[in-house]
Length: 108
Length: 193
Image 1 (cartoon, rainbow over the protein chains, first blue to last red):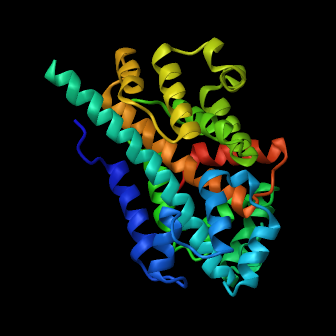
Image 2 (cartoon, rainbow over the protein chains, first blue to last red; image 1 turned 90 degrees about the horizontal axis):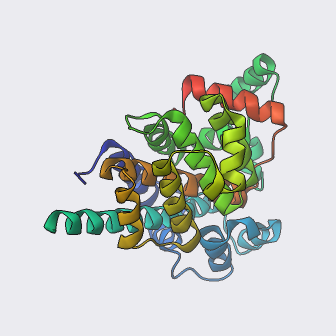
Protein backbone atom coordinates (compact mmCIF):
# COMPACT_ATOMS: atom_id res chain seq x y z
CA UNK A 1 0.00 0.00 0.00
CA UNK A 2 2.97 2.30 0.55
CA UNK A 3 4.53 1.56 -2.80
CA UNK A 4 6.17 4.40 -4.61
CA UNK A 5 3.32 6.22 -6.39
CA UNK A 6 3.39 8.68 -9.28
CA UNK A 7 3.59 11.62 -6.91
CA UNK A 8 6.65 10.26 -5.18
CA UNK A 9 8.25 9.37 -8.51
CA UNK A 10 7.73 12.94 -9.75
CA UNK A 11 9.19 14.26 -6.52
CA UNK A 12 12.21 12.00 -6.83
CA UNK A 13 12.76 13.25 -10.38
CA UNK A 14 12.78 16.85 -9.10
CA UNK A 15 15.28 16.02 -6.36
CA UNK A 16 17.52 14.13 -8.79
CA UNK A 17 17.43 17.01 -11.25
CA UNK A 18 18.41 19.77 -8.85
CA UNK A 19 21.10 17.71 -7.16
CA UNK A 20 22.65 15.75 -9.99
CA UNK A 21 21.78 17.53 -13.24
CA UNK A 22 23.78 20.23 -14.92
CA UNK A 23 24.09 23.43 -12.90
CA UNK A 24 26.08 26.62 -12.44
CA UNK A 25 26.78 25.77 -8.78
CA UNK A 26 28.84 22.65 -8.16
CA UNK A 27 27.01 19.44 -7.30
CA UNK A 28 28.83 19.53 -3.96
CA UNK A 29 27.51 23.03 -3.14
CA UNK A 30 24.00 22.02 -4.20
CA UNK A 31 24.14 18.95 -1.97
CA UNK A 32 25.24 21.13 0.96
CA UNK A 33 22.40 23.58 0.35
CA UNK A 34 19.92 20.70 0.06
CA UNK A 35 21.00 19.26 3.41
CA UNK A 36 21.55 22.73 4.97
CA UNK A 37 24.92 21.55 6.19
CA UNK A 38 28.51 22.49 5.49
CA UNK A 39 28.27 25.73 3.50
CA UNK A 40 30.70 28.55 4.31
CA UNK A 41 29.58 32.03 5.41
CA UNK A 42 27.72 34.03 4.25
CA UNK A 43 25.89 31.40 2.19
CA UNK A 44 25.24 29.27 5.26
CA UNK A 45 23.11 32.01 6.84
CA UNK A 46 21.01 32.49 3.70
CA UNK A 47 20.47 28.77 3.19
CA UNK A 48 19.64 28.19 6.85
CA UNK A 49 16.95 30.88 6.64
CA UNK A 50 15.49 29.37 3.46
CA UNK A 51 15.26 26.00 5.16
CA UNK A 52 14.02 27.03 8.60
CA UNK A 53 12.60 30.57 8.56
CA UNK A 54 12.23 31.71 4.95
CA UNK A 55 10.06 34.70 5.86
CA UNK A 56 13.18 36.23 7.44
CA UNK A 57 15.25 36.23 4.25
CA UNK A 58 16.20 39.81 3.40
CA UNK A 59 17.71 41.69 0.49
CA UNK A 60 20.88 41.91 2.59
CA UNK A 61 21.19 38.09 2.74
CA UNK A 62 21.16 37.89 -1.05
CA UNK A 63 23.50 40.89 -1.38
CA UNK A 64 25.97 39.22 1.01
CA UNK A 65 25.88 36.02 -1.03
CA UNK A 66 26.57 37.99 -4.20
CA UNK A 67 29.36 39.97 -2.56
CA UNK A 68 31.03 36.69 -1.60
CA UNK A 69 31.40 35.85 -5.29
CA UNK A 70 28.23 33.87 -6.05
CA UNK A 71 26.46 34.66 -9.29
CA UNK A 72 22.69 35.14 -9.32
CA UNK A 73 22.33 31.85 -11.17
CA UNK A 74 24.26 30.04 -8.47
CA UNK A 75 22.11 31.67 -5.76
CA UNK A 76 18.97 30.71 -7.72
CA UNK A 77 20.09 27.09 -7.71
CA UNK A 78 21.24 26.96 -4.08
CA UNK A 79 18.03 28.56 -2.76
CA UNK A 80 15.99 26.04 -4.76
CA UNK A 81 18.10 23.18 -3.41
CA UNK A 82 17.56 24.41 0.15
CA UNK A 83 13.78 24.67 -0.33
CA UNK A 84 13.50 21.28 -2.02
CA UNK A 85 15.76 19.76 0.63
CA UNK A 86 13.71 20.94 3.60
CA UNK A 87 10.43 19.93 1.93
CA UNK A 88 11.94 16.53 1.17
CA UNK A 89 12.82 16.00 4.82
CA UNK A 90 9.23 16.81 5.79
CA UNK A 91 7.86 14.46 3.11
CA UNK A 92 10.14 11.63 4.25
CA UNK A 93 9.31 12.20 7.93
CA UNK A 94 5.59 11.98 7.15
CA UNK A 95 5.98 8.87 5.01
CA UNK A 96 8.11 7.19 7.68
CA UNK A 97 5.49 7.86 10.37
CA UNK A 98 2.78 6.55 8.06
CA UNK A 99 4.78 3.40 7.29
CA UNK A 100 5.23 2.80 11.01
CA UNK A 101 1.53 3.35 11.72
CA UNK A 102 0.38 1.01 8.97
CA UNK A 103 2.98 -1.67 9.79
CA UNK A 104 1.89 -1.72 13.45
CA UNK A 105 -1.74 -1.78 12.41
CA UNK A 106 -1.18 -4.85 10.26
CA UNK A 107 0.69 -6.65 13.04
CA UNK A 108 -2.14 -6.24 15.55
CA UNK B 1 11.71 39.50 -7.11
CA UNK B 2 15.01 39.65 -5.29
CA UNK B 3 17.23 38.32 -8.10
CA UNK B 4 17.56 40.47 -11.22
CA UNK B 5 17.66 37.34 -13.38
CA UNK B 6 14.16 36.44 -12.15
CA UNK B 7 12.86 39.85 -13.20
CA UNK B 8 14.72 40.37 -16.46
CA UNK B 9 16.64 37.24 -17.39
CA UNK B 10 14.09 35.56 -19.64
CA UNK B 11 14.48 34.60 -23.29
CA UNK B 12 12.85 36.89 -25.86
CA UNK B 13 10.13 34.30 -26.61
CA UNK B 14 9.32 34.03 -22.90
CA UNK B 15 9.18 37.81 -22.53
CA UNK B 16 6.77 37.93 -25.45
CA UNK B 17 4.63 35.25 -23.81
CA UNK B 18 4.54 37.25 -20.56
CA UNK B 19 3.45 40.33 -22.51
CA UNK B 20 0.71 38.35 -24.25
CA UNK B 21 -0.57 36.90 -20.97
CA UNK B 22 -0.68 40.37 -19.51
CA UNK B 23 -2.56 41.67 -22.53
CA UNK B 24 -5.11 38.85 -22.64
CA UNK B 25 -5.70 38.42 -18.91
CA UNK B 26 -5.38 42.05 -17.92
CA UNK B 27 -3.04 41.01 -15.09
CA UNK B 28 0.75 40.79 -14.85
CA UNK B 29 2.19 37.28 -14.84
CA UNK B 30 2.42 36.20 -11.18
CA UNK B 31 5.95 35.69 -9.85
CA UNK B 32 5.11 32.04 -9.08
CA UNK B 33 4.53 31.49 -12.80
CA UNK B 34 7.59 33.51 -13.82
CA UNK B 35 9.85 31.46 -11.58
CA UNK B 36 9.11 28.21 -13.41
CA UNK B 37 9.98 29.88 -16.73
CA UNK B 38 13.49 30.83 -15.61
CA UNK B 39 15.95 28.17 -16.78
CA UNK B 40 13.07 25.68 -16.72
CA UNK B 41 15.41 22.76 -17.26
CA UNK B 42 16.90 23.32 -13.78
CA UNK B 43 13.73 23.59 -11.69
CA UNK B 44 10.55 24.62 -13.51
CA UNK B 45 9.89 21.57 -15.65
CA UNK B 46 10.36 18.99 -12.90
CA UNK B 47 8.65 21.19 -10.29
CA UNK B 48 5.56 21.70 -12.48
CA UNK B 49 5.34 17.97 -13.09
CA UNK B 50 5.48 17.16 -9.37
CA UNK B 51 3.12 19.95 -8.32
CA UNK B 52 0.62 19.03 -11.02
CA UNK B 53 0.73 15.37 -10.00
CA UNK B 54 0.20 16.30 -6.34
CA UNK B 55 -2.58 18.83 -7.01
CA UNK B 56 -4.37 17.37 -10.03
CA UNK B 57 -3.20 13.74 -10.28
CA UNK B 58 -5.34 10.83 -9.25
CA UNK B 59 -6.45 11.06 -5.61
CA UNK B 60 -9.44 10.39 -3.39
CA UNK B 61 -9.05 14.02 -2.22
CA UNK B 62 -10.93 16.54 -4.35
CA UNK B 63 -9.13 19.41 -6.07
CA UNK B 64 -10.77 21.74 -3.53
CA UNK B 65 -9.46 19.65 -0.62
CA UNK B 66 -5.93 19.74 -2.03
CA UNK B 67 -6.06 23.47 -2.72
CA UNK B 68 -7.24 23.93 0.86
CA UNK B 69 -4.27 21.88 2.09
CA UNK B 70 -1.98 24.14 0.02
CA UNK B 71 -3.56 27.24 1.55
CA UNK B 72 -3.38 25.76 5.06
CA UNK B 73 0.30 24.74 4.79
CA UNK B 74 1.06 28.23 3.44
CA UNK B 75 -0.82 29.75 6.37
CA UNK B 76 1.30 27.77 8.82
CA UNK B 77 4.43 28.96 6.98
CA UNK B 78 3.10 32.53 6.91
CA UNK B 79 3.70 32.88 3.16
CA UNK B 80 1.33 35.63 2.08
CA UNK B 81 1.58 35.08 -1.69
CA UNK B 82 0.67 31.38 -1.48
CA UNK B 83 -2.05 31.97 1.12
CA UNK B 84 -3.68 34.44 -1.28
CA UNK B 85 -3.29 32.25 -4.35
CA UNK B 86 -4.58 29.02 -2.83
CA UNK B 87 -7.29 30.56 -0.67
CA UNK B 88 -8.71 31.92 -3.92
CA UNK B 89 -8.27 28.61 -5.74
CA UNK B 90 -9.81 26.52 -2.94
CA UNK B 91 -12.71 28.98 -2.66
CA UNK B 92 -13.46 28.71 -6.37
CA UNK B 93 -13.01 24.92 -6.43
CA UNK B 94 -15.46 24.45 -3.55
CA UNK B 95 -17.60 27.38 -4.65
CA UNK B 96 -17.56 28.16 -0.95
CA UNK B 97 -15.23 30.94 0.17
CA UNK B 98 -16.57 31.10 3.75
CA UNK B 99 -15.58 27.47 4.33
CA UNK B 100 -11.99 28.19 3.28
CA UNK B 101 -11.84 31.32 5.44
CA UNK B 102 -13.20 29.38 8.41
CA UNK B 103 -10.49 26.70 8.10
CA UNK B 104 -7.72 29.29 7.92
CA UNK B 105 -9.18 31.24 10.85
CA UNK B 106 -9.72 28.23 13.15
CA UNK B 107 -9.28 24.68 11.93
CA UNK B 108 -10.92 23.12 14.98
CA UNK B 109 -14.25 24.93 14.66
CA UNK B 110 -14.45 25.03 10.85
CA UNK B 111 -17.42 23.28 9.17
CA UNK B 112 -15.49 20.50 7.39
CA UNK B 113 -15.53 16.70 7.57
CA UNK B 114 -13.43 15.11 10.30
CA UNK B 115 -11.07 13.19 7.97
CA UNK B 116 -10.05 16.45 6.27
CA UNK B 117 -9.70 18.24 9.62
CA UNK B 118 -7.38 15.61 11.15
CA UNK B 119 -5.33 15.52 7.94
CA UNK B 120 -4.89 19.29 7.96
CA UNK B 121 -3.95 19.14 11.64
CA UNK B 122 -1.25 16.56 10.87
CA UNK B 123 0.10 18.59 7.92
CA UNK B 124 0.19 21.66 10.14
CA UNK B 125 2.20 19.87 12.82
CA UNK B 126 4.63 18.43 10.26
CA UNK B 127 5.14 21.84 8.68
CA UNK B 128 5.47 23.67 12.00
CA UNK B 129 7.61 21.18 13.92
CA UNK B 130 9.37 19.32 11.12
CA UNK B 131 8.16 15.98 12.37
CA UNK B 132 5.10 13.88 13.12
CA UNK B 133 4.89 10.71 15.18
CA UNK B 134 3.24 7.38 14.67
CA UNK B 135 0.49 8.48 17.08
CA UNK B 136 -0.34 11.45 14.86
CA UNK B 137 -0.68 9.10 11.90
CA UNK B 138 -2.81 6.64 13.86
CA UNK B 139 -5.18 9.48 14.69
CA UNK B 140 -5.51 10.34 11.00
CA UNK B 141 -6.06 6.72 9.97
CA UNK B 142 -8.58 6.20 12.80
CA UNK B 143 -10.66 9.07 11.40
CA UNK B 144 -11.13 7.06 8.22
CA UNK B 145 -8.38 8.52 6.04
CA UNK B 146 -6.79 5.81 3.89
CA UNK B 147 -3.00 5.36 3.81
CA UNK B 148 -3.03 6.40 0.16
CA UNK B 149 -4.88 9.59 1.06
CA UNK B 150 -2.24 10.33 3.70
CA UNK B 151 0.47 9.86 1.08
CA UNK B 152 -1.40 12.15 -1.30
CA UNK B 153 -1.73 14.83 1.39
CA UNK B 154 1.99 14.55 2.19
CA UNK B 155 2.76 15.17 -1.50
CA UNK B 156 0.72 18.41 -1.40
CA UNK B 157 2.55 19.35 1.80
CA UNK B 158 5.95 18.73 0.15
CA UNK B 159 5.03 20.74 -2.95
CA UNK B 160 3.91 23.74 -0.90
CA UNK B 161 6.70 23.63 1.62
CA UNK B 162 8.95 24.02 -1.42
CA UNK B 163 6.95 26.78 -3.12
CA UNK B 164 6.37 28.72 0.12
CA UNK B 165 10.13 28.87 0.76
CA UNK B 166 10.83 30.08 -2.75
CA UNK B 167 8.05 32.68 -2.52
CA UNK B 168 9.56 34.07 0.69
CA UNK B 169 13.23 33.80 -0.30
CA UNK B 170 12.81 35.31 -3.77
CA UNK B 171 10.16 37.78 -2.57
CA UNK B 172 7.12 37.06 -4.75
CA UNK B 173 5.10 40.24 -5.17
CA UNK B 174 1.54 40.05 -3.84
CA UNK B 175 -1.31 40.33 -6.33
CA UNK B 176 -4.54 42.26 -6.00
CA UNK B 177 -7.53 40.13 -5.00
CA UNK B 178 -8.65 40.30 -8.65
CA UNK B 179 -5.20 39.04 -9.65
CA UNK B 180 -5.42 36.10 -7.24
CA UNK B 181 -8.92 35.25 -8.48
CA UNK B 182 -7.74 35.34 -12.11
CA UNK B 183 -4.80 33.09 -11.20
CA UNK B 184 -7.15 30.70 -9.40
CA UNK B 185 -9.37 30.45 -12.45
CA UNK B 186 -6.34 29.59 -14.55
CA UNK B 187 -5.11 26.95 -12.07
CA UNK B 188 -8.52 25.27 -12.02
CA UNK B 189 -8.75 25.26 -15.79
CA UNK B 190 -5.18 24.32 -16.68
CA UNK B 191 -3.51 22.97 -13.58
CA UNK B 192 0.18 23.41 -12.83
CA UNK B 193 1.85 22.01 -15.94
